[in-house]
Image (cartoon, rainbow, N blue to C red; front, side):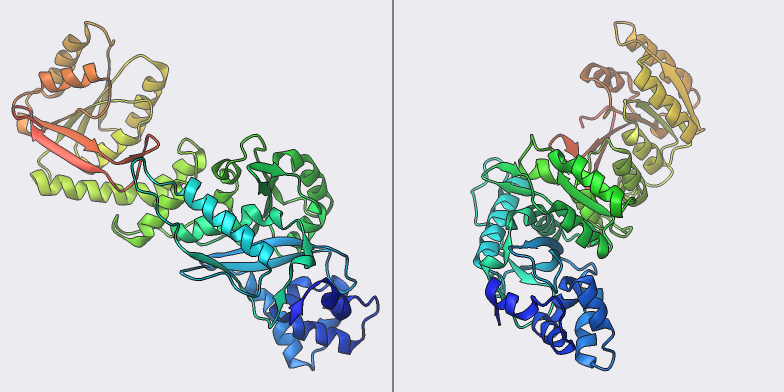
Amino acid sequence: MHLNAATLKKLVDFTGPSDAQIRTAVRVLGGLSGLWLSRTARHRADGMTEDSLTQRRLAECQQLLHSELGKCAILLVFSKPLAMLRNAVVLPVRWVKDSAHSSQFPPALHELADRVRHAVFQQWFSPKSGDVPTEPPRWGLHPACSGDWQLQDDLFHGLESAWASLSAGLVAAHLGLLPQMTAFASIALQDGYSQIVEGLTEKMAAACDFGATVFAVDSRQREAAQTAARQFAPSLTIVSAEANDPSLKGVLRSYLPEFTDEPAVPEHVKDAVFQRCVAYYQLFDPRSKRAKTFKHSHLQPVIIRNCRSQFREKIGEGKLTHLVVIVSGSPDLQQLLITATGVSRVLLLHTNDARQTNAAMELQREFPQSCLASFVADDSMPETFCREIAKFTEHVPPEQVGIDVKSGTAKMKYWMGRLAHPENWILNLESAHVDNVAVPGTERVELWRAGVSG
């Protein structure tokens, strides 16, 4: 059935509908009926317990907002109020790879989906420099519910407000991440500029009726959203996208981490689960507490096992007992090296810079087998290195000593390598980088004797 403004009005615009009119509406709307009927009409329909078809259609809405790959929920406002329906409604949709858009959706939604697809693969998954531009992967938009209907353009106004939800859904689908169906958004982006969304309060109310815990809005509407949330959903978290950064990444930066579900803990770097974890981690600012917590719980254990395996293959287990490292302001790398090598003693060389000193003390708390030694990055540095390393490795066979040359300035690395005993092992840890951030799981152990070129 073609559902345009006129046909839908004939179907559901009754202020005192009969049971027969409610049943007809449920049959036509199909799986949407449980999401679209007003509270009064829904209550009446729920009472028709003898009508099994009506009950099946209403029960579908319990499944429509379950998390599935490619799924997202968009919020729409009818062009004209209809007595038996909500003013704003939830429409669950799904991105399907290698397919065309569903004919059940109106041309305007097809056009929006095309623009979303183009923006996602030009901005979020932008080609690397020098790559030949290719046609974006084919993803089609489909209903995530049953129903023998075709929605028409004149049913809704402000379709643009579905932009953020559709974009987040497509990014998550392409990354293989499941959506968090309790996160909703109403953010419009048109012609490179974010737009003020109409019907925001009604959309928030509809989302909250179906379990919303997070709602994303343009930063200019944050105050209005917070005011509305205090009235009917005090626990709702309002996330705002910066209106002054209307790029796709700018809009989704704060929302997408809330929209995606946290993956399971992986077993190995080659697991598909690990790649999903990396994709999830890369949604966050790597400096944020949430990113660090996720990295330590999901990525770091697997990375350590992978690096430990590489060390064993190169020199065997237990060959290194002492490790010398220069502490950086971010101690993650040193934590990885110390744990992966499994050494019994560690010398932590650090400057008197507050950040490095704090990082060194943090490492010493985590690894009680370590000792600290400070140095000044001037002409006295080589002498300090020589003295502290000699003291640390006294009576230790040189082939059991590892010297890390990954951290520190070029001059520090030079002197670390220069002062190493010919039988010491020189350690370096390389990895691929995206936007100057190391990609977890790409760590590559480099190991060579001090007397041999690396």
